Length: 223
Image 1 (cartoon, helix red, strand yellow):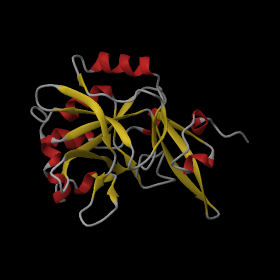
Image 2 (spheres, rainbow, N blue to C red; image 1 turned 180 degrees about the horizontal axis):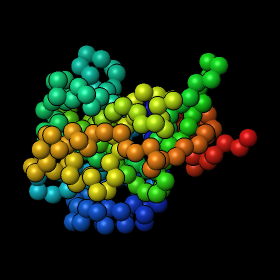
Image 3 (cartoon, rainbow, N blue to C red; image 1 turned 180 degrees about the vertical axis):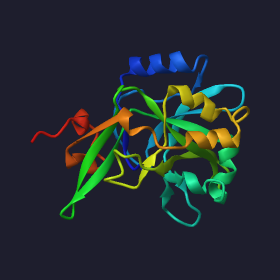
Image 4 (cartoon, rainbow, N blue to C red; image 1 turned 90 degrees about the vertical axis):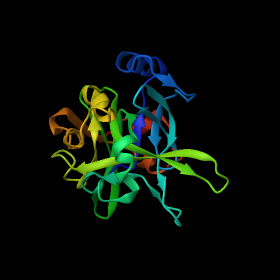
């Protein structure tokens, strides 16, 4: 499961990451301010590959379901090929959704408490994602995205049985390159990241509000 996440790095850090790992990338306009509580329905910063060049820009998070107001924000790795919603996008419409942390909740005595998960390297990483072209009744073309989930690693398993697929920099290009990465190779990437590379700590329950957007969202709770 992945329902909230962050991209808290500064504009200069984000630019350096993009320039170091995706040279000559084509960018659309997007906001480069820190994000502390990215929620479904909001825009996410995504990288896509069209077979020739990388592109980066904002895409709404959540694929609309037909005849339903709900958004599909997560796609289970185990059912990607069998679900018509994802089987086509899996081949040519993969994306990397940039992040540097995400939230999960633990339940104690009927109350949920938020936890913040990060990599020990404190690096930017990518969620393995898919994007889809959406056409409105007026024939306007837009895009929407979803995050692929897999079974939880040992760190997250006590709190939830699912976690987002996290790709570090060395794996991002392999995942995006549908021309040279076979289906078998791609699925090998859609596995839980080693729990030893991660850590977490409790944060304020203010993050439960989707409108809460502050650096204090990721500050550790004091006893």
